[in-house]
Figure 1 (cartoon, one colour):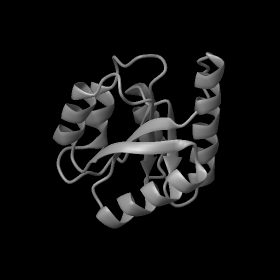
Figure 2 (cartoon, helix red, strand yellow):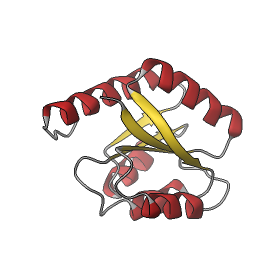
Figure 3 (cartoon, one colour):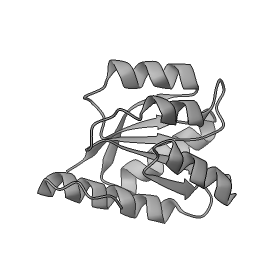
Length: 133
């Protein structure tokens, strides 16, 4: 299964790198992206049944990834939201999880873990199981 993914990232070079890299090595296809909180929230609301994975950065052109996480709290069980950030502080990761993130990954050192997470999520959807990883 190929996951339908949405990316929230405000830096065009990072966004392009993530899209290219992830589509080449993870079982996903990006179906949209936003560079700010308001645009992300609008897209996610307008496309509620279209996405299976949202990848969210915390620092955005407008607003924050925390606001995007809050807006995703009422999502379907098969929809996962992960944070991909440059922040390393434990309290930031804990706050993301409190707001409903399924996982938090570091941009510079954990892309391989994100790829593995995507693979597990795709396998769970294929098998009809929804486990939390």
